[in-house]
Amino acid sequence: MLLVVSSLPAMAQREATRGALARVEEALPRRLNDGVLSLKDLTPALIVSTQPAFEQTRAWYPAAAVTALSRVFGPGALRACEACMAQRLTVEDGRLEQYATSLSVQDLVRLDEVTRGSTARAVSAIWIDETMEGVAIRIVDLRNGRILLAENIDQNLVSITTSKTTVTLAQELERRSRGDAIAHLFVDLGLLPQQHISLDWLEQWGPDNANLSGFTISIIDPLIGLGVSYFRVIPPAFNLMVGAKFLLSVPNAVINSFNPDNPQAFLGDSLFTGVFMLRLPLFKTNYALLASISTNGRVAVGISLLNFSLLPFLP
Image 1: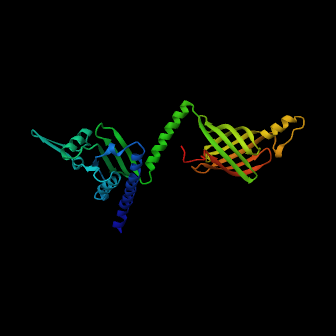
Image 2 (image 1 turned 135 degrees about the vertical axis):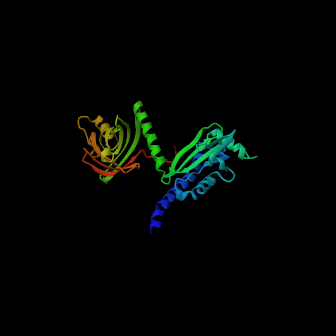
C-alpha cells in the first residue's frame, strides 16, 4: 500500500511532463511557420541538456525529451552533446580543475568542433529541462549567442497564458499613459417581448478604463434613429455595463419638418427617444445578455454582439 501511495506523485508528475512535451511538439512547429524562427536558423541543433527534475523520471525523461524534439526537427537535424551534460575535468601542469557550471557559447562551439567529425557544425543549442510544472526550453544561436526561444511550457499552457496576460497589462498601461482610446462596435439585438435593434460605435476611456461613449444608430426603437450613448462598466458586477442612449427619430424629424404645427408620432416613435440599457458580458466571449426599456414604452431582452466580424477569416 505504501508503495502505491508513494508512486502516485511521480506518476502524476510524469503525466504533467508528458503533456508538456506534447505542447512543445505543437508549439515549436507553429513558431517555425510564423516567421519568428525557421529550420535553417536552427539546424543542425546541439542538444545540450535534458535534465530531469525528479529521481523517478531520471531514466525516462531524457529519452522522451529527445523523442519530442526529433518529431519536430526530423531525422538528422539533432546532435547529442554528451560532453555538454557531463562535468568537465581539466588536468594541466600539475593542476586539476573540475567544472560543474553551465557551458558558455564558446565552450559549446569548441566541444562541437571536437566531437562532430566531418559533419556540419551546429547552428543552435537546445536546453529542454524538466520542471515542477512541465518543461523549460531554451534555444540559442551558436553563431552570435542570440536567444531564439526561451519559455516555460506546461500541459495546460498556463505559464504562456500568464506571460501573455502580463505583456497585455504592460501594453495597456502604456496605452493609458499615451491617452489612447479603444474603439468598439456593438450590435444590440433585443427581440422579446418587443424589439430594440441598434449599432453602437463606442470608445473606451478613462483612468480606470470603465467608460464607454460614442454614436449609435437604431434600426428599431426608434425606427432609423441617430444619437449618442454612454455606458459605465462595473467590474465587481461581472463587468456589467449600465448606460443609456439618446436618439433622434429621422422619419419623425423629416415628417414634422413639413408640418411643424401638428407634429406626428410615426409608428409610435417619439421625436426623441431615450433608451436605458444593461449589458452583461458572457464570460470571455464576444456576447452579452441585453435588457432595455425605452421612453416609447418598449421593453426588450436579447443579446449583444461585442466587436463582431462579418468576415472573421479576414484580418
